[in-house]
Length: 149
Image (cartoon, rainbow, N blue to C red; front, side):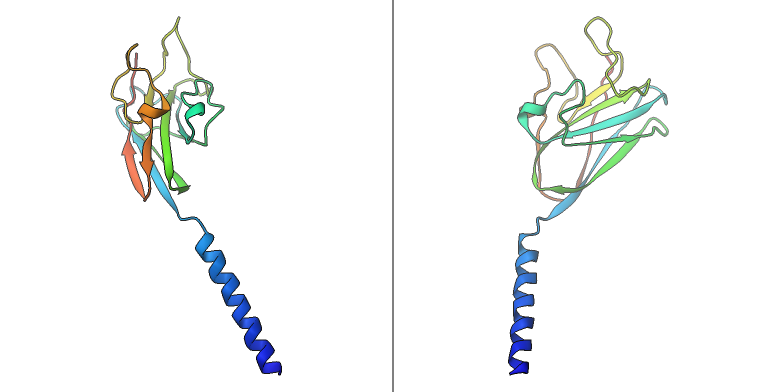
């Protein structure tokens, strides 16, 4: 009888453990790199977004995840760890004064900015989540161009 109870207990534990493993969501890292920064001042802010209503985010308050990195030899790189499969967009700021905000002139930013899938910015080519978004389903990396206006 004791042996039967022990076998049942082991079976239940195995079933529960395998059920937990099946429902555990796979996650992957995403590495984002910027090059050709115009100077080594400040830091680079990397913001990752996963919903359409959060992007663009001029004040960096609606992001899914945000990382900050130092600049070395005109380059900065971060890795967003443990990202679930999904649709994302990246927004980058060369935060030269380190205040976490975009410094602007009358209208245009004075600091460098960048968005996934964007090589340039124009009045007719403004960033939206739909334009900047990419499908993420495995470990990957990307380079985002910094634009100085």
